[in-house]
Length: 547
Ligand SMILES: O=P(O)(O)OC[C@H]1O[C@](O)(CO)[C@@H](O)[C@@H]1O
Image (tube, rainbow, N blue to C red; front, side, top):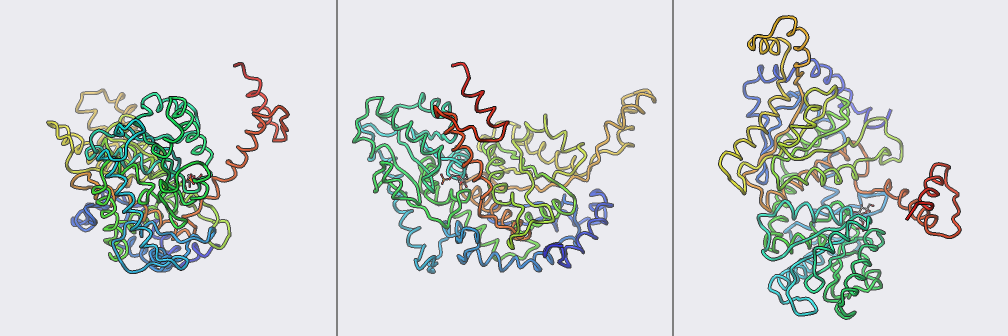
């Protein structure tokens, strides 16, 4: 038995889960008229209705006990204060410092990182303003119209999805494009859309060793020169964001055009750093600061609010509740906002790269489930597709519904319809439809008794499916910042309870290494073909392909 599963709160939760499993959410609502009011919490411009979860007050008490026995509060403090909680890489985890307005020194390896952060923000602001004002121009003296941001993983998804989410705030006259995949189609298609004279390339790579990013940047540079740009123009058109300045310089980026980031920022937590430069270029620096401010409000709330009102704690503990006591293997994020359609993919990367681990902090294999599959999409589209599984599938898939109360495009009845669909889905998941209700419905339609017998069971919806509803007045840089920080901390809470390191990612390494040796075999005149039989065969097929 692991240290987690031997905690008193764990056994108490296991026992309590049996009672809750025997109780329908309809009953929980019927028994407690105040439930909707009591299970509503608010922070940093976000409201969380968590009343449609399979919980009661005892559940919350026991989850709080689990948090206490797991030392959650101390772990939160350890992260914010810069302890090297990423113990497998001996690194602090300080993305929260990137959005902090505190001036109290925060020391990492003998340096006050507040000063480096502030200096980088100043450099970013000057750059963004210079591009916007047309002072930083292309080599033929034309202002930039396009930015091509090259990076992958955390150096890609944050900037792309946040900028996409904030389209109503875009700076006029500047388009950002994002290239991640090493598939040549990705960069080819982008380069077809831009003009070398008016395009600025941002190469974003924390390590400056990532195959995809280095390859795409070289391709972009070759294209730039092949289109007639002089060598000396590279400095004007290529900037980099990295923690590996020597490698960037060696690659050919001018040192003054390098924006720093640091070891204490994880890739998937880095959009708040200079990795967010494309966001700042797209929405302007003032609004980029609002994004940081929104996140800081959530950080403060996370550190200070009591657990029963603490959004990240509640959402993280609820995720543990379903993963470990209801055998739920996935969690769905449903954005009821077209601008937020990319958010599920962002949270998927954040959560699955963080909590997709099976070895605990002591180095032992876990004997409980950890990170569930995170997936999702845009409402109402999903209602006509995978919601079928949410409503009538055999397992439990907890859902987060996210809805801004006001639209940036308030057209006629559209927004009320969107909201009605969102609330209607949470209601249907919660209450379902009983056999009697299904039968009555068919009787009212005048269906014959034997046809009702045949059809009614298929129309039954068990309900009792949990969901959270997250509301914000409007999608703004500040509310988006708070929303992303909420999910970061939710991820942290789960990892802390599961006793895993949410901040390394060793699992992605092996495939990279093997990929490199396979590449040698694909390109070499004398391939070694010393892989397993299947892989060697695939290599041979590729080598013999018709061109
Ligand atoms: O910013 P880099 O160093 O190019 O890394 C890109 C991404 O690759 C990973 O290391 C995983 O392969 C991510 O964690 C990271 O965000």
